[in-house]
Length: 396
Image 1 (cartoon, rainbow, N blue to C red):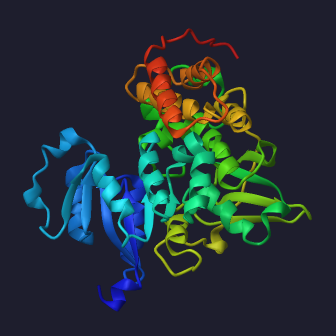
Image 2 (tube, helix red, strand yellow; image 1 turned 90 degrees about the vertical axis):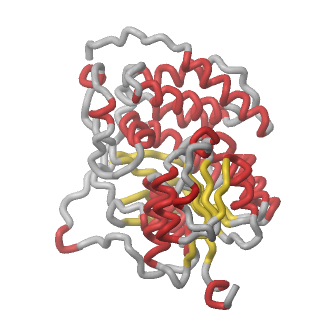
């Protein structure tokens, strides 16, 4: 490899065909002298994956769904790009010594294995998969410390906290405040939400995201998961983490220090900015992200979340306090419940209900192993599959 390529950070993008993955590749394309996509993965969208491979010419591509892999027309792939299948393919990419950064943009618990293997190999891991830290935050952070790996946040809120924290020391932090757009149902009551369907829940007012994350935004479960993520990522107590609704999505989070100073990170709602910061950290470079036009700024609004209409948020605090197996159970139950909602099998308001029921009735372990977390994940999904639609009170 010549010196010019050696200076570039070689990046593997897990989940490259999703919204985060596509934004990541856009950043890489805008910084060709600094970044190089050497590995890409998709679960089933192999045609999109091959289109990306033609543009970025990676060393590997991987399809993680074995059934789809058998249907792939490999003739459409450049012979210079190696075709990999399943978890073994992911493992080969993220553990290769020539790889510098692994972006984990696979949605849900499926992203845990790739993250784990990359950290075991001492890589820098840009975590866009919050579920990994929700499921196994203490284990993940301990592994990173043991192997000399680096965990960098890609979520806009956690990236904002990470950036603001650089102005002080961890022990000087009084609290952090995560901002939330409020999703498509901000200001609605439970009565308004009884009959909403997937089409309405997927109309996010600010961000363009995949369906699962968009529904999480509608229930505020995304913020619940982010509370848990912040707990482990930054070593905070649950009482140090707050959430406010900020519909304009310009202020991405605040950090309040013990002397009363409050620092915030601001930018238009464009995921390419936190992605680029994770890929080029600690440097800041010109990139493709949109800029704030200060001459056209209007008023920003901040308000308390409506805990009665959106009870999912409280689940995040409970999980952050109890730890153990609770994160894996909440994450799995939510993924399964959202999947049923998107399939038209579960009412919108039953998503947090089923999550609470499964969480409260699981066999809790305070210090689980990774194997135990994977097992409770499976059990939680089975419980959701058995959930029967409940009669929802329609009065205010």
